[in-house]
Length: 240
Image (cartoon, rainbow, N blue to C red):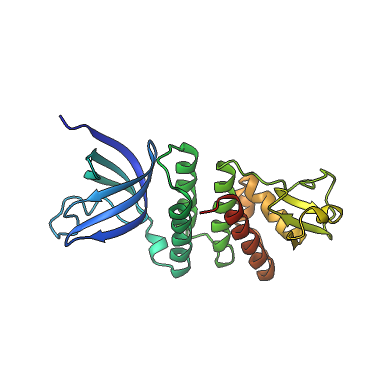
């Protein structure tokens, strides 16, 4: 008798196959990343198509075959209508999806990451999210994703000498694992000079202080700099 597996899943990628099939990349609550084949799901009369799609949280059922995991049932739990109506929110959702696709390679259960994705998409879907703070959702994802992978960053004291930070002479070092002071700059010549706004924002993100983060007013130049060090840290700590 064929064993059926059931779990909750977040859909972050889909690819069409043959004439009517579709492959879904999902992050599941119980099994981590899986590739699931939806046979004939693109047909108009498919019973599966209403229950699973891009950025859905769904309850899925599948069987394990020799070459594929095949979807046998799908029921949508949550869809995020406000994201699909906003180009910037869609862009951020795909940034998160691309990161998952690039850096999650194995089948490894992670309840914390599953919860983080649920949390992020709830916030991204919120109509109270200001345009200025939309991109911070992605940076929140990067730093908390890195933390869950075991790459937490020091943002309260110098990551090298542990002394108190001077807000006018601070740098971010992937090599040293966080913010460093000027006198420790010789330990990483590639460290990026940052400002106190970056440190403040990183502290809020790492504390998971959503109330403060969503009210935060950050200069565009500082937000661009935060984006630069966020992407740099992601590449350094979780290389493809």
